[in-house]
Length: 619
Image (cartoon, rainbow, N blue to C red; front, side, top):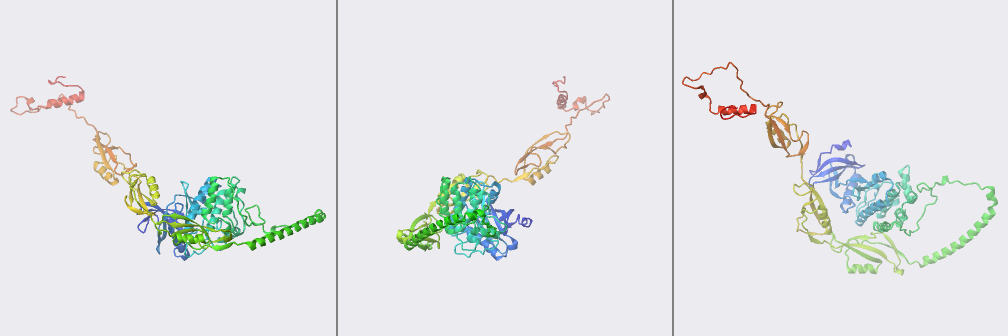
């Protein structure tokens, strides 16, 4: 990590101040940073120096930024900025404060039913959004699922994602999805689609439900082969508290043949919702191919060279005629049954009028009544979902299920058609932005979303408005906006208080006190004076705020200054008082004493003796 600490304190592109290193991967290092322009903390994912010029690594890095830039979903990590300069390549993304699902599983072991359902549901929502945009993640695994403290999750790391109409990133040992979670088609190098993500999610669910991976071996190659050929041990054998319906969903997602899996995230969500609403739900699952000779450990097939042949004993020889007779009977019955079955199968095939169709691309076409009529006349039952989206004109098709090039079977003779769902843009909707100043930020955020707008929360200090309340919005209130527009909500984080450390003022002079106050950003408070035997006059005896204490800048500090020791002056006389010569023209020496001397003497005597002196001088 030391080699990356040198970036701490640096500012990338005069905007992102690096705070600390928060993660290091095989290809990149992730920093926590402050976005000086937007005044928020972000994560900066920077390509490592040693692979900065590697073509495939850079392509994967750019691929990740393109993939996530196409997506906008609460369960997908947002990307704010991308820089691919020669000297510095980094992605600025949402800072997610939490832990990976992998670490959570390692910490807890088997997760509860509610946790599995909640996490899976959020991942499926993220995948459904990505798949609708034509993006296949290809690396779904617990390490790429971030868990936040509030229970929500974020899908991250689209580095090897398959983008629509884009060159696929070469699958190297660094880019391929982790072998413990990859689909059979990934492991065997075949064509992949959104159903590959479904398989990887099934493996992730298996690990959440059992605390174990379905396939483990000494080498990645062996694990990859097991992903292609072997069936996993049923999860309920490892966790008998697991509902049967949930086990069926997990096993259905992990089918080897993609055609036998859930065909979309939306379809899997519907099944999940049924089990969530009623954990006793049991599905009627289609029969699938099974692997023979399964061992009891991890569903691994037993090698042929381990199987043992036993020599028949005498008892078995003596029973041979009986066994042979029974076997012959069964063989005759089997042959007859087989003839009947194949005859019926032949008739069925002869009468089979079903046909396979390839789903065309409807995305980017414009939906109309004539378009719908043509589809209805053809092979489709159409369901339309209308969505406000300012990025697309009205009536443009922006999503479809099934996806283009997928295959479906229909039977026109039986009026059986393909179910087709189309998402159609309603274009931009407009609204007037209300005034949310002084509103609670959460209330304002929800209100903005309900208007079909996208809120962006930015916190900044404010001396008057309480923390968590809206300062202003950008655009201003009253602005007419199209649906899908961004609204920045500036929220108060409270006063921007700077702190300083109080110095040691004792025994300082007045000028030294003023200099220290100015240096530390403090202010002079009330100053009092008192006599002190040990502190020289004009110096500080005490201060109201103790030294080394952290206080807000501008804090006033009171001082007690010394007047020095208290001294009482007295006039002592002796028997040999000296005679003072009076002027020659004086008749009475008392005439030379000022009139107020008697009063001064009386005050002095009164202070010393605590008594009183009358006007005549008598006590």
